[in-house]
Length: 562
Image 1 (cartoon, helix red, strand yellow):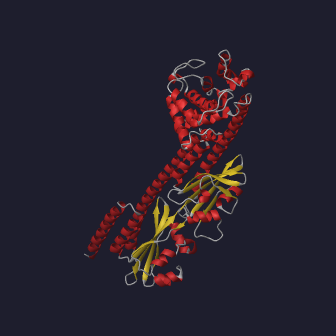
Image 2 (cartoon, rainbow, N blue to C red; image 1 turned 90 degrees about the vertical axis):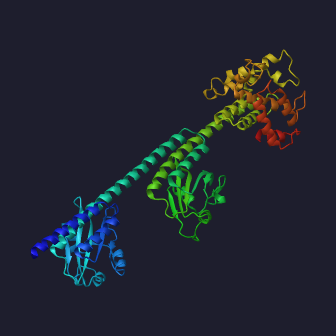
Image 3 (cartoon, rainbow, N blue to C red; image 1 turned 45 degrees about the horizontal axis):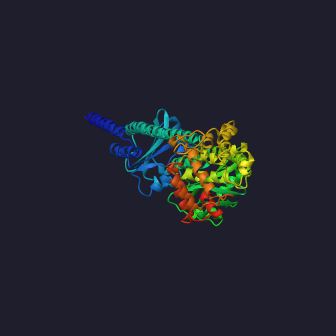
C-alpha cells in the first residue's frame, strides 16, 4: 500500500513536471523562465531559493546571477561575487562533465569562499549545469533549508529534468534574440552601405563644395543622430569653418560658418595635426580644456569626435561631431563615419581642383576680354561689368546653377568677336554711320568662330551669338524673335544695354540708374524680354535702396555686385 502511494505521488510529481515544462516552453523572456523555474522547484522539491548564472559567450565568462527567493542580505553577495569555475576545481569538473554537484553542508565546505560559507550555513546546496545543444549555457544553484533532508535522488532527477528543459527554452530565447540582433545589425550595415553609396553618388556627381558638404552633413546626421556637425577646412595656418549645424543646441561663435579656428589645444586641431580620429568625452568642465572645447562643453556637448579629412595623404580639413550623450561614438560607428569622411574629403579636393581650373580658365578668358575692352578707352571694364550684371539677373530669376554659369561666361565673352573689328571703329569718338555698322554687326558671329574650337565653351556660344537679337525679331544676326532667343542671350542683352546706357561716351553723358531702368522698361516687349527687365529692375531697386538718380561709379558697382 505504501509503494502504491509512493507510485501515485511520483506520477503526480511527473505530471506537474510535464505541466511545468509546458508552461516554461510558452515563455519568451529569460527572467520569466528563471522566475517560473524557481516557483516550480519550490513546490515540487521544497527549495528555498535559486540563483542562475548564464554564460556570456562574448566575454567568455559567467554573467552576474539572476535569483529568486534570496533573502535581502544574500543579494549583494550573489550579484557582486562572480562565478569563477577556474578557482573551484570541483565546480569546474562539474561543468566540464555536465554533472550535478551536491553540497549537504556548504557552510563548512572548503570549496566555497568564506564569505559565502557564512551565508550558506543551515542550508543544503545543489549545483546543476544548464546544457543546450551540447553546450553549457549556465549553472543553477538550488538551496534547501537544513531543517529538511538533503535533496534525494528522485528530487535531483526532477530538478535535472526541469533545469534541462529550462536550458532548452532559454537557449531558444537567446537564439531568437541573437537572430533578431543579427538581423537588426545586418539591416544597420545594409543601411550604412546604401547610405555610403548614396553619398558617394551625390558627392561624386557634384563639383559644388556647398552641395557636397550639405549632402554629407544631412546623411551623417541621419546615421549618427549627432546634435552637432561641423566641417572645417585647412586654409593657410587656420581651420576655416565652412559648414556647421547644432540642432537645438546653442552654436558657439567660434564654430559658426565663416569663422576661423586658429591653432589651439582642441580636438579639431589634434585630429588635424596627427591625421587620426580623436574622440573626447567631457565628464566635467576640466580646467585644462582649450577655449573651443570649453565652448562646446558650455553648449551642452559631452561627446566629441574629430575625424581628419584626408586626400592625397594630406589632411585637408576636419569633420567634427558632437552630442549631449557621454560615450556617444562607439568604434563601429566611428568606422562608418570615417568612411564617409574619406569620400567627402576626396570629393571636396576634386571640387577644389575643379574650382582652381575654372578660376584659371575664367582668368584667362577675362584677360582676353579685357584686352578687347582696352582697345577703346570708353569700354574699359565693360565685359566684366556685363558679366556681373548678367549673373545678378540670372540669380534674381531663380535660374539653375548651370544656367547662371553659362550666363556668366556669355556676359564675359559677349564682345570677344570685336577682336576682328577695325580698331578705328572701336575708338571712334562719335556715333557710327550707317556704312560703319555692318562690320560692327559681325562681331557676334566672329566671336563664335573664335571660341568654337574650345569644347568647354560650346554651351556658351548661343549667348554670344544672339545677344543682339530683339524680342520683336528686328535684331541680328539671325533675326530671332521672342522665346526663340536663348534665355542666356536675353539676359546678356539687358545687361549689355544697361552698362552702355550708364557709361559716359564722347558723344553722350551716361544716364542715371533710374533713367536707364526707364529706358529698358520702355523697350521691354519690343527690344527686350519683359520678364528679364523686371527681374533686373527689382534687383537694382533693392541694391540702390531708392538712390536711382545717382550716376557715380559706386552706383554701378552696387548694381553689378549688388
